[in-house]
Image (cartoon, rainbow, N blue to C red):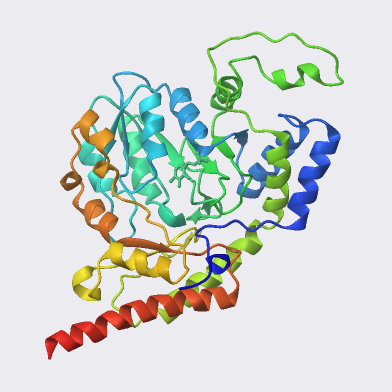
Amino acid sequence: MQSKEDFLVFGAPRIEQDDIDAVESVLRSGWLGTGPKVSQFEREFALYRGASHAMALNSCTAALHLSLLASGVGPGDEVITTPMTFCATVNAIIHAGATPVLADVDPETLNIDPVQVLQKITPRTRAIVPVHFAGRPCDMDALMALASQHGIKVIEDCAHAIETEYHGRSAGTIGDFGCFSFYVTKNIVTGEGGMVFARRAEDAARIKILGLHGMTKDAWKRFSDEGYKHYYVVAAGFKYNMMDLQAAIGLKQLERVEHYWRRREAIWARYMNELADLPLGLPAPVEPHTRHGHHLFTVHVDAKRCGISRDAFLDAMTAQGIGVGVHYLSLNEHPFYQETYGWRPEDTPHAHRIGRQTVSLPISAKLSDAEVTRVIGAVRSILQAQSVKVAATAC
Ligand SMILES: *Cc1c(COP(=O)(O)O)cnc(C)c1O
């Protein structure tokens, strides 16, 4: 048992002196809310990804919600998404007034399977929300082809996929909208925070208005030194704006985004090499002409092969002082969706099985080499202890 201080917190962000100084300087400037730092963060993040329009918001959940509204999604519509995602993806669909529909994942990539999507398309389908799971890009060629054949929108959930690329294009710039998260466990962080890309200028303008109470464009400037300007409310909007306090951290984190990515890529490579001989399921190789975001490293614990159940493995890792995650229990395992939509885990058999076997090992850029060694050592000792037991009972 490790001491409490040694506990390796899953997904702990890497915060540097620059981030701290940036927050201090915003505090001293007196302009804490939405202002020049937010505008600068929007410009620089859009430039980094090659997006034409970027709007900073207070979360990826807000980005998904506003993208759905700007797509015209509302009551009576259906929106197809994956069961291998965080609940926010589906909740945003529900808050837009639509009915979420799950299409199963490809068991290798863990991304939504376009063949399953096609089977779920009805005359009511208005949008698809693919999630680039763990940072691996979805099969966007197939999804975009389906969308154009059926006249439906594509909203990319890029919460794991800031650095992800697909056939030379950045994730989030392929569909109609791309939604990013800067939540504390994500690849770069602002505490809470999100960003949305829109391909069309009119969609971007709509999101700008809806994200700040429905007030006319640039209403945040009404208190600036340019002099008081009247604003007009043109929609019942939301309080989804990002603050300069958050954007200041985001700007510093963005300077290090590639550095962090290379660190996670190196951790990924060590896990792939040093866990390869164990009876664990490891992630599929990265597809050609794509870039993986390396946000999560998920292994599959099949009790039959490993001699230990997934949940017992989670407990054993925690007992060794290593925080682990589960991404994700299939969404149709949750009571609310079962009661409201009649969903059953068996509806999406791949996601059901994966959700009960998956474990996320720590892969934050904050991890030192020694900590990565500790994680590998813990996984090996837990599985080897089991194989000794299995061998002993076999005798
Ligand atoms: C984290 C996450 C979200 C929500 O992001 P927030 O910024 O916390 O709202 C949405 N989708 C996926 C796949 C996520 O991992």
